[in-house]
Image 1: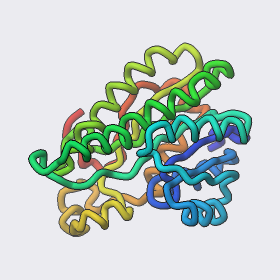
Image 2: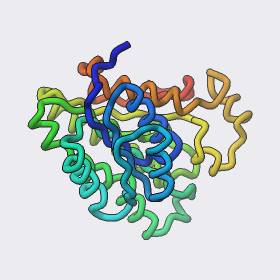
Image 3: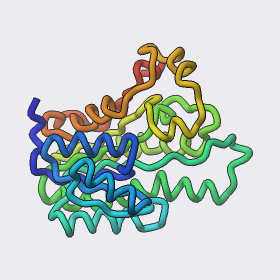
Length: 245
């Protein structure tokens, strides 16, 4: 299937590994000119070489203003940014009583303001060109909170409301805004949480954890010309784990 995005420019954040890297690779394979970023300069440079991305930039999305500067740099260097994939690392796993004020502020900058700043950086250009795709990678925890992921549960749920509000404002200008909700997927983040893949598989109707490539295929489609009538949605890729609508 020709997704109709060859020659478009994308910024994929958090792309040195895991879901971000898989999405960036899928877009490169569709002929998209891809810029990638992560906090680790050496890792993101290696990822660029391995997947064929056009531009790699070190960036800590948790630093105030970093996401805005990043998106503007991509536009300046590549001439546009047609596709934004906002993707950040997960905050620490803690119950509410153990989350410090500083950790709440870190979560606000890393999960919430980085999304706001990224969108503010690319949206004017998308409006001027009459075409754009904004994808916010959240989590199934945004819909069904997971035990202990208090910071993530709170801020990522808010991104669903943000996406719906923004999508209504820009739908008539050729711009779509969607959230992608990964379920249990074989990434470093899942391994860091030290959970049993066998135990997880028992809770998932598909009977296993997902592969990053499966999630990336969904992202590539939602970033495509063919997905022009899909906006304001929160789409899960979770093997049937999510129980609610």
